[in-house]
Amino acid sequence: MAKEVNNSVQNSTNDTTEFVEDMDFATMLEEFESGKKTDNEVTADGVIVEIKDDITLVDVGKKSEGRLYTSEIKDTDGNLIYKVGDIIKVVVTGFRNEKPIVSHRKAIKKEKVKAFINSFNESDNLLFDAKVVGKNKGGLIAENSDGIEFFLPRSQVAVKDPQTLMGKTIKVSVLKIDKENESIVVSRKKPLDEERKRRKDIIQELMEKDEAVEGTVKKITTYGMFVDVGGVDGLVHYSEISYKGPVNPSSFYKEDDRVLVKVLNYDKEKKHLSLSIKAAQPDPWQEIEDQLVEKDVIQVIVSNIEPYGAFVDLGNDVEGFLHISEISWDKNIKHPKDYISEGQQIDVEVIEIDIKGRRLRVSLKNVIPKPFDDFIKTHKVGDTVKGNVTTLTNFGAFVKIGVVEGLLHNEDASWNRSARCKDLFKEGDEVEVKILKIDTENEKISLSRKELQESPIEQYAKKYDNGDIVNGKILDIKDFGLFVELEDGVDALIRKEDFGNLSVDDLKAGDEIEAVIVFMDEKKNRIRLSVKRLSKIKERETLSKINKDDKMTLGDIIKDQLK
Image (cartoon, rainbow, N blue to C red; front, side):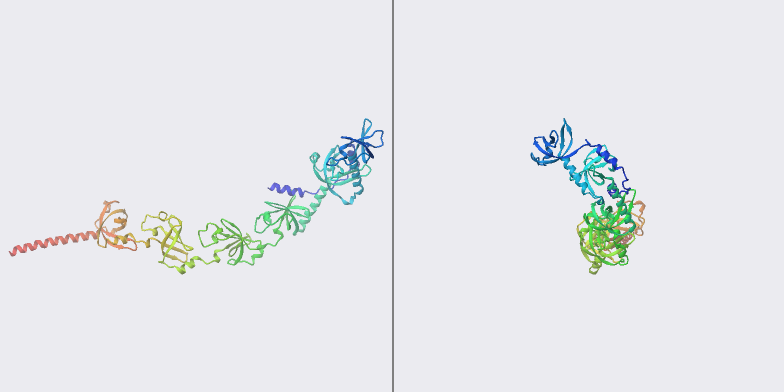
């Protein structure tokens, strides 16, 4: 793309060279005339004597009639223009077997050349189009749209290989006129040199003035647009159109629009003129420097929406950025388009201004009520609420209650300690939970589902009470005690001080163990057992039995003695 830009600008801004030097025009004309077929062409009036299919005979006052190709006196549709007896202008171009060879077309051309010469004024400095139609040893032959023939000397072609111009239409100006020989010498080099000098003067003037000038949009591309300033084309890069940053030129301008531009730079080596539209306008960032501060609330228009946020227009060629996280208090935004639309007018709060970096960040959520504040006005710890699971994590689940989210930890989701939220729910499920805690400082809500369910210990407590002797299986052995699994999946703890005469070294996970219930906390789902207490109970029972047996034996003895 850079190559295309450089070439386009180079074609219109080449360095100016000196005007064509004085030349020996006589030599030029001599070269031109020597390239003709004959030196004694004569123009005369002839009378059409006979018209045949291919040849027409014309009386030109010679011993024999002249021979003329019939095609020369037909129009473009093939119809004859003249008839026998008509007088026409012809040029005697030569003789064949003493019979004159004549041409009506050449006569017409000569008449046109003569008319051009007679009306030409050197002060007009006429520039016109001519098509290269032939060549001779001195240069090229060109014709304009009226069929007037010109001679373009090799020295005035302005290309290394004149052959490359054959059949092409070029811009030329008159270099010399020879009225005597009715010849017109033209130059392609002269107008090119004049145009280059003119462009160089314009660029020099633009650089010296260093001020905004009006130009015309000539061509729009994806990377910018070319603007004509006084006959010189310069490039306005798409990053130099607006202070908003790079923009699509076709969204702002069309060809032939008039625009104010300022020259940024001219690269003499690349012949590249760089222009700027935004440099010709006041810098809006400087305007807002003393007008806006952080926390200001301003009205903007949503100009562009992306998956990561939106750009908002302040209306003065300054854009701010609204990040997706600043659009709503909802933490689960999928796309900004779900909340805002392009062209929408919204109020936002300025959260960052960087004039030097030309960066402005705004927030929409800061100007709308905070859902958490509304939530704590209508909810309190202990309330039972319903919500939907929005996100599942390794540590729990986030549950959306209205427009706020609370966290349901794995340990609060079920009385089954091995169960996790990922195993119990899927996203979108509705759950009923209890509010455990509201952290107003950090705006966090803790939830519980298991507190709304009957705990295993509550069920266990319906069958057992403190002091009951139970059997269980050892789950784990710790330094501070033993974890025991009772029936119905209820866990209990035997603390070290409740071991009694129990030898832990002889125990392992899976062993059966007997103990007595010494404590049950249905709210915290805890049960404590004691082997030590069980030993005391059993000792009392044994002693009681012994005592009972002893009393019976003594009575019997006394009874026997009384007898």
